[in-house]
Amino acid sequence: MFAREIYIQRRERLRAQVQSGLILLLGNDESPMSYAANTYPFRQDSTFLYFFGLDQPHLAAVIDAEEGTEYVFGDDPTVEEIVWTGPVPLLRDRCELAGVRETSPCDRLGLVLNKAAQEGRAIHFLPQYRAENAMKLEPFCDAAVPSGRLIRAVVQQRSIKAPEEIEQIEAALDISRQMHVMAIQMARPGVVEREVAGAMEGIALSHGVRLAYPAIFSAHGETMHNPYYDNVLAAGDIVVNDSGAESPLRYASDITRTIPIGGRFSQRQREIYSIVLKAQERALSMTKPGVEWREVHRATAVALMEGLKTLGLIQGDPQEAVAAGAHTMFFPCGVGHMMGLDVHDMEALGEDYVGYTDTIRRNPDFGWRYLRLAKAIEPGFVITVEPGIYFIPQLIDQWQAEGRCGQFINYDKVQTYRDFHGVRIEDNIVVTADGCRVLGRPIPKTIEEVEAMASM
Image 1 (cartoon, helix red, strand yellow):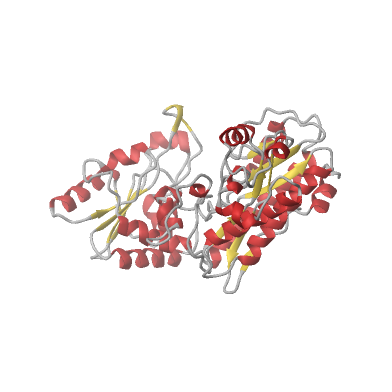
Image 2 (cartoon, rainbow, N blue to C red):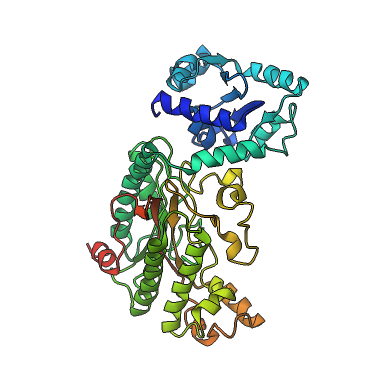
């Protein structure tokens, strides 16, 4: 946990922003894999962690925004439960570390919420992504109507990362660097993808942490969230490795590297890789406070189109091609997203709260609608920067059949790349007062660095 004063200050700010009513924050329960006693590894709700730091299941908290009182609700284990779990610190002792003095058994939570509801007091709660937590709310309030005031207050606080949070993200990145270096060295002809994916997860576990999200390690990099690891790697393949560890306090990292199997990129792979790397460099050079992230995305897309034009895949003016949406066949996602306690930070609260404003609205067009962050960025934002080029055969065929963006896309040339798969390069940055800083120690990224590492 952080110092208790940090959690106290966070809750004081939250209470001042919400102003009235009760603030209800639900922690997570354990989730069964196949029956009640066989559970997935526990992961606490990120907002509960942010304000209370308590990383144990079956907890809830209530903050009275008017009176300033704070309660954590939970039960100490019985002797019979200790037989299975081992000794656990008492709830009051754990709460003291977060600066909370008042605790109460779980069954008292309903009484507190019932009383507030009968008095007509507002009960502010966040959107629930777990069904069991949504069910807990039903007796006391309309679980379908989370508090916009509370969501905005939480997003405002969690968006700006304090120095101690940056330290945690960089601790996660230290572990991720080990994972990626090992993967570059291990990914050789004849190796099955799952061998590398399993070894990377083993590195995280050896540090006492877990992955921030299921690793993507695939020779089919055109499938951006590919969950399969069954391909046998062959010389000449390229593999997209999108993986990151959590820190001890659950902060995420999210890194992607593209690896040549056999130690060297082919000429065609070098060309596409260079285009993606140049686009990332353009995005980084634009990043500074006040810049709208959607403009960084747009400039990145133009850089990709400029590069593809040199190869004859794109024709015409790259700026006009992007305005027409031609880039989305090759780059159908966003250039980056917020990151923190969640790898897609605060996505459970609603991306429109996190990445958009009342005046900067989501573009519903294909490709653009997957941009998770569009608004002006601020010092303290932690963002991923992850351009890519993807050749998705089904998408190519559909667009060509429809004659879509035919004035910009040379489909005959594109068809010769349909088995290329994809390239993605991703780093994590913090926005500073006058620009940005790439977080963590460098991970091989240039063609020369990656090839040297892959040949070791």
